[in-house]
Length: 302
Picture (cartoon, rainbow, N blue to C red):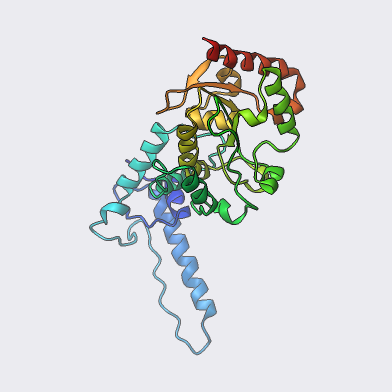
């Protein structure tokens, strides 16, 4: 497979040294390396005092390309690295907020080091989340936003990521959207205290930005264990980001709502609807959210 300047730039941005076979490399790469070597040598000469002897500058050319090791370390070979990149991009559905291939590789690496929460009880789970440092958000949060409501509830409601007021109070759905959610629940005969509320993320992303892949992966073990401990009869996912991450899809929310889903590895019916925060901006869609709530209620009455 041919190695291009763009691919080399991806690896350089990740700080990964790469052995490149001359047979695999794009010829223009040698021009880039040549120019870089020339510039670096000139800078070194300019920094030397007048009494120092200027080194001889040897500029690589197409006829005399840079010398590379004859045998590459297996883990750094261009073939292996680009095969891994291709595998990731072909097998994983990257969400819109995945800014680069480098981020997806970083998320994959971080996932392999996550805490195993599968045997935790409530106290162990919450204590571990409070002290969690599995992603960069731990040093930006005021406190974690773990849960609220009944831990033996029939209904479990999962939102996106905490916002400012949730980060301040340590509880999910505490702003204006939370009050709208309370009204939505009352419309189908439920109170906040009778359902279980949580988010996909336990920490607030800076400036309320969308979660990164690594951040979602870091919190998924907590969320999955929460679902197992609550063992609800139905899960209501509110919001596009939560729906796409938990259902492992890139489908827009408009295509996900109005039908029944199941989360991978969990045999619990899932209904998707709009986040109350969205409904505050687009009140005309409240009727659609009402239809989703009725669908969820109908599933429980079967």
